Structures are given as C-alpha cells and as structure tokens.
Length: 569
Figure 1 (tube, helix red, strand yellow):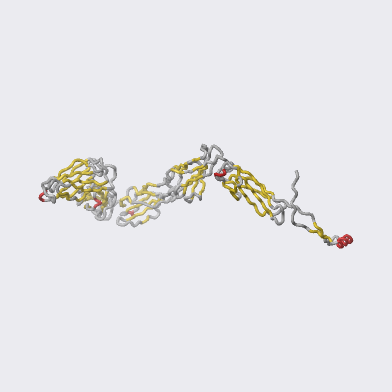
Figure 2 (cartoon, rainbow, N blue to C red):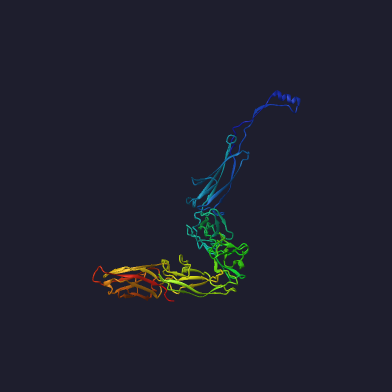
C-alpha cells in the first residue's frame, strides 16, 4: 500500500562552513578549532497528534447500553510522537449530519432513540511549528430503541417511632415492559428537598421502621426502577417525607406512701412519649428531685441529696406538702429530655404526737342555683398529745376539676356562677389541729348534678314560642333516658286561670316525651323524659303554646326552664 507523501515543514535549518577555516582546522588538527559551515539542509517532516477514544461509558446506568435519558461520557487520550505540545482537544456529538452536543459528556434525548451517534474527538498542536497540526478519531455509539423504565415514588405510613413507612415505586415503562427487581435505599436528609442526604445502613427494602434516630430529620426513599427488557435499569427517583416529628417525653408523678415522719415515700409516675420512644433509666436516665412547700405557698424548698425515686420523711417536713419532681429522659428521639413536672399527693406530713383525722364526712344541701352546699365532718386527733381542732382547709371544685374561685375555700359554697350549671361539686377537707398539725385529707362529691337553667319569656295570646337552651361540653353521644325537665310559670292577673302547654324539643328538632300543662299562674312542673334519641350537646328548646286569652295584648310568663341530666342519688 502506497503511503501519501509527507507534508514538508515550512521551516529550514542552515549550516555554513568557511573554506579557510576548514583548511586551517585540518592543517592544525586542533580539536578545539571553530568551523563555520553554511549550506541549506533537507526539509524536516512533521506528524499529526494521535487521538484514541478509549471508551464511551454510560454514567447513568453503569455497564448498560445507552438509552434515552442516559448520560454518556467519552474518555480520550492524545499522543504526539514529535513531543509537540497539545494545544486543544474538542468533542462533537452528531446524529447523522446534525450536531447534537459538545463536550466530553452528552445526555441522550428521545430523538436519539434507535439512532447511532457519532463522536468526533479532535486534538491540535501549534500549527506555526508543525504540519499537520490536527489529529482526530471517531466512534459510533448506538442508542437503544427501547426506553429505560421510570419511577415516581411516594411514601405512606405514620411518622412515629416504631411505625413502618412503605415506599411505593409507581413503576412505568413506555413500552410496557414488565417490572423486574427494583433497587431501594432509604436516607436521612437535613433539607426538605432531600439533597443533603446520608444513606441508612441496611435500609434497602421498600419498607422502613422508624427507630427514633430519624426525628427532626427528613426521610428519603430512593428507587432505581428495573424492567425485564433492555435497557433494564432506569434512573434513580426519590420521594421525601415531611420532617419527622420529635416530641419530648413527659411524665405525671406524685409521691405515694404514709405521710408520717420516718415513713418512706415512693415516686409513682407514668412515662409518656408521643413518638413511642422508650424511657431511659439509670444514672443518665430519668431524674428525680424532692421538694417541700407550706400549705399557704408554692415556693419550693429542695431537699438536699433527695435525687432518687424514694424519700424518707424527716421531722422538719411536718406540716409541709411533699412533692416529687420528675424529669423524664427518652432512650431515643429528639428532643430526648422532657420538662420537669410533679404534684403533691395532697397530704401534709405529720408527726406522731399530732395526727388530725376527719371522720363521717358529708356534703349537705341541694346543688342548684342560689342554694348553699356545706362540707361537714367530725374532728378527731389520733396523736399522742390529742390537741383540739384548729382552722381546717377546704377546697371546692367542679366535676371538670377546676377549682372554684372566689368562694371555694371555706366550709360552704353557694351556687351562683354560670359555670355552676350542669356539674357535680367536690370538696377536699384537710383537718387541722390547734397545734398546727394537718391530717389526711378526705374527698367528697355531690350525688347529683346541678341543673341547667335559663330565664323564660312571655308568650302572647294564641301564640307559640320556643325558649332555647344551648348545652356544650358534655361527654357521651346520647342524652339520658331519664332527663329531668322543669318549667315554672309566673302570675299575670286575668290570665292566671288559663292553662298553657309546654313541650321539650331536642337538638334534633323532634319532640321528646309528652306535653305538659301549667294550669294556672305560679304553677311549676318537673317531669322525666327518655331523651336517649338525642345528643346531649346542642340547642334544646321548651315550646310554649298559649290559648286565646280573649285579648291579643295579654300574655303569660315562663319564668324558668331547667334540664337536669343526673338527678338520681
């Protein structure tokens, strides 16, 4: 095979020798003689740089034939056998005659499906000193007609410690190729986009059980979809949860035991954690602190060294409440330390010589508006000194646990506040001696609820009106089967001998029980109805119908409308 003639370089080297100098040098034979020779040399031939495309690799799915959406990366090397410096290397990707990309990386598009791409790599040297100065190489890259599968993952489940989250692939393949075995990885991330993520070791299935370590972070589910037909592997896709909630633990605690000098109290507490994190115990776990207060003040006095779950009552604790303060610690999760909390048992520490005692306690009176309740008991003292009674302590509460103020700190309480309707009443009695000692408190509750009450309205001759009563906050879904209804009529002179009719209407709008007649002025009626078909909360009505009084300007008054949900002792 004939090789093409080399291209001549456009640079010449000149060699010049003086005849006299040459003769002299030959005659003298001096090794150090200088000779100058001038004569044109022959042309010097140059060589182009050699480009080799070492590989074109699939950066998206390693080892897989290129498909639509994959990023290809060209790796090329250049050698110049004349040791000329390489001044530049360029990449050009073409689909047929169309240039589609430059640079050593190219991401295929749907237009490339089933096509052959041609990669051109050119390398240059300095054309001023060598010719040829350009070398190149090409390589064809086939793009699969079939597209890789895709995924649009989602995550479901309850974001709470020990709960299982499930990643859903939502697989898709444009050609309908069946799904293969997908690849999964779960991460924790510090940002909502899931970019700053850290893989969770071993979390390589489509399910993940929250351990508590993920609290206050985001969770990322990554799936690499796989089909059964080439190209089998798609690009990884990810779903990100909201921030995993983290709740501090909390504890409800109180001391339990006999509140006498020398007796040991135990911190009885219940640990709670909304995220399901287990309690941390031991020296670095849940902490305890015992404090005391006077009955008149909540200024804590910390007992030095009392930092375990047990406490022995000291002589100096007599006459004081004893509290245990618990600071819960969680084994996992963030935050792991809860707020400190605690309550006194309700008893005041006592000594052996002064032990007041309340016997035969009771509540006297009817729980109704304007009525007075009285806390009653018999005082005794079981101490060795047997002192007489002092000023006892009383605390009245309603059935929802709220303390009554003002007026709830004496032996009696008169119902007169709006909040006194529809509730039971309790009282805590702490007996006290004239020496200042406190006894064990006793707790009482009224046997029946107070009724709800509204003032009435006037009903004119031959008219019907509704007197509304709105009730809220009651527990349960049904009203009682023995709801007690009350209605009272005022006196109005000439219409006193004319009867009026009353009927209870439930929150549903239907009548409840039969109607009643208030025959004359000043009459009052109470009756029980089965209201179990009604909800307890809502607007109840007393429907009042007046007869023809003979004059349209005449009217009758309903002074009170009451409902009592529990009236059975």
